[in-house]
Structures are given as structure tokens and as C-alpha cells.
Image 1 (cartoon, helix red, strand yellow):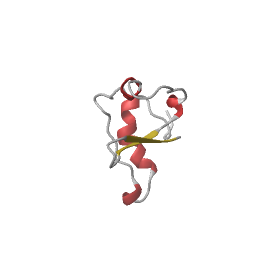
Image 2 (cartoon, one colour; image 1 turned 90 degrees about the vertical axis):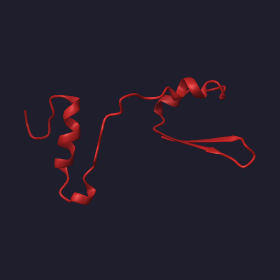
Image 3 (tube, one colour; image 1 turned 60 degrees about the vertical axis):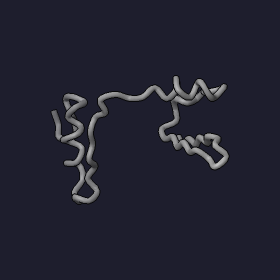
Length: 74
């Protein structure tokens, strides 16, 4: 195995920082023990969720009028 490969996905947490020289830019990672089902949750409030699997960032705000605003970024 070369220096740019990992054998197990769990090794990425310890190996990825080695690719960075500066301490302040080294990523710190961890695995989430569980992930919330946002698609199932949002389906209760949004009629069309097509294309949601290509979105990577969600920002949900509660507005002053008590409505919810959802922003998404690919």
C-alpha cells in the first residue's frame, strides 16, 4: 500500500491530517454515531424534494414571522 492509500475508511481520521504541513490547516475529523433522516423530516413540510441528494449543505432559519426558511448549497 502506498503512502496515499488507506485500507479502512476508519483510518481516514488519523491519516488525512498527515497530508497537511501546517498544523493550523490540518483537519480534525470524527465519525458521527448516527445521522438524522432530514429527507424524511423535510418531506412533511416540502412538496418536492427531488434533487436533494446532490445538496451537501443545508441552512434552516426560523424567521421573525415564525416561518421556516431553508437554504441549500450544492
